[in-house]
Image 1 (spheres, rainbow, N blue to C red):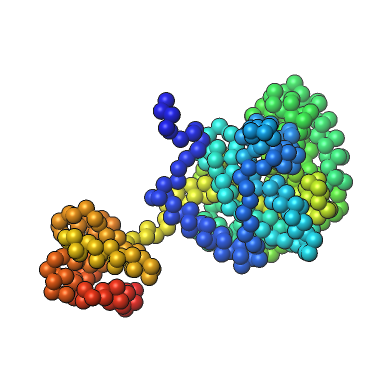
Image 2: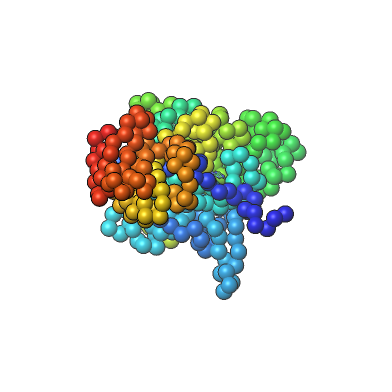
Length: 423
Ligand code: HAM
């Protein structure tokens, strides 16, 4: 094994693949800003407590997927597996609720989970995360799902479906849990070892076990929807009504339980059929108790995170491409004097917003014309010794093959002029 190779489950996103990432990021930022979200940037490392307490000690993430290590003084630190806990930590720590509890934030960045790597699943992956604090109304639940739907449609993705469920609240959860535990007890001979364990530690998670035997045994399991209290029921009905009104297609999915413990009421995922097993491109939900649990006042909240890597993979599968950015101008400078001048021209042009390159390797005119072609240059500026001496550089339009002669005294202004005229 070569020690200079990247860590398993981590990857480089290379320049040839970055355009789609930039396109998604640009669309997302524009849309979020229009919908009143402000960007926030958070550290990738937090005290382990921040995640363990919020995500839940008995979840897969906390039990087996976090990158946790002691720092040199012995503090237990964790590379963030998600952004919500850090977001709440920051909201509480900076008392952001003091002037106005209603705040809307988004953040984009890397997350870390030590899962088994496969397509669409990495140990360092990226999320586009948005959270709304301080609003209990079901309108914001619908609004967030609407927002996701709008983003995906702007990106040209139509095979995505919202799955929604309600997980209830502390008033209705206990009755549901009792019913579920009764069933789990009666079916315990048929459950997989993981579900036997979950029965004690996190019974809700048995509902989305993928083992066929468990699926069969829990076919008739009670669902949170069967037990919703009047308020939770009304809340969920409003979410569905508003989504219908706004023509957002969704599936009411009573098996959707999510992998994090902090959820109450609305939970949702956006799923695709084009990524095999890793079908969730985004997930989120309401977490009305978490701000208080993390030391803040009693303030409701809701949010989602988009799996950036997966979203880009869906777009690649559908052959959505971002336009490759081509070169505006390639400077062919022949000889030392021309190269020196060409260097200053190219820097000036870069400063004026023209994507321009110059080659310093002393190659022939023929070789450099070939290179200009390869780079997809729209224009080529030819500055040989003869052109400099005669004060007549050649500016060639590579599409039309039209050539004009420009002065070597101030070619930058002429080139900018030519660009303004033709673009
Ligand atoms: P999550 O469902 O754990 O939720 O993750 C959200 C999305 O991140 C997933 O739907 C998936 O697309 C992507 N994702 C998760 N793990 C990986 C991985 N190993 N490799 C690639 N992509 C992955 C959360 O993280 C919550 N914090 C969402 C939230 C925000 N809930 C409320 N606010």
